[in-house]
Length: 401
Image 1 (cartoon, rainbow, N blue to C red):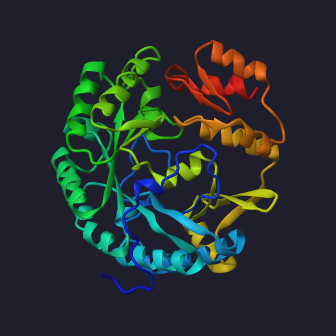
Image 2 (spheres, helix red, strand yellow; image 1 turned 180 degrees about the horizontal axis):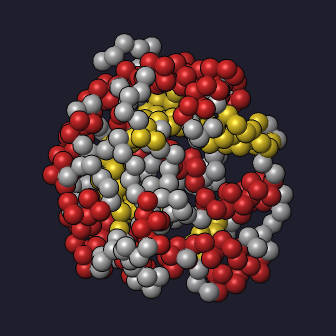
Image 3 (cartoon, rainbow, N blue to C red; image 1 turned 60 degrees about the vertical axis):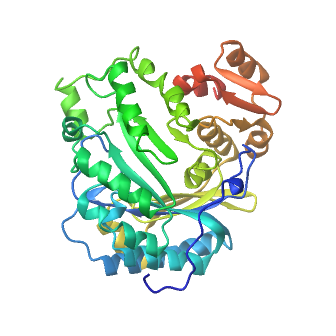
């Protein structure tokens, strides 16, 4: 195990993961590693292709920005840490250990804290898995995306289906918890094809799956190809047909739909993402990272510079790479909470929304959405119905108008 000053977290206990939508006080740390071996054509994340990265320099910069975030947040108890990107599995295990040691030195680390690292399934990156485990990572999130070589080539992925299955097997042997991603609603994908692919994937799944519909994001390579009619996606009528059977098939394997795109065994929900969706506090370090930090009666939104060169220069100059620290108005807090919380199957507390926003949502709006079968209300809690989750943007537009 790399030398360090903190003890490796034990595996999270399912009983420790609260299920109430009124949960408050969760605090997370997000670490963004912006570099990739190649840019996937569908990706609009803040990622940059770089052949050589001075990881020692970047480690020092991340540690310095963490110091600044501690100044903003004050003392907290960290529930999850997540390394995202970009491609965090390009990080050296020593870099991961150094960052985790710094976080543990700045804040209290909860017993059983969830430590997630996103990884790609190439053989080179899978070779680092044991090093990440020794550094303290106890949950891996694999970007599998498909188990078909032709589809992986279309998606611009560098791994094969065989490498993906080998990485899944190694990850299951190495980490207490494992999630992997699949992308559906691809060109030519029928309901029958998706059901077969999902069942095949579930045969290898551990306790969590993230299933994302392929969408065309602006300024991506796919956006340019789509404009030229190089390929077509399932139309608006067909996409729900692909989504509709997904929850039932996952439930057969004991994974319930706790969020629009995420399925988990009991107690295996992503703690880090729950902090976002439950509108709790988190800090983000690295290029383009965002944060939400409660400071007494107010709440701050932080945003870092996106370009790696600009970010690291700013850290060297100012001690952080932030380009904006803004106070979020009560109305914006209420909207953000609802936008995130209605993605969860557990729903949202109307009392907490009113406390944050300073206003109640008009009962007539809620009643109309309930009457249309798009919302369910149970006392203080509102949640999207199965039908509502398929048209969530429209539900939110009506609710928050």
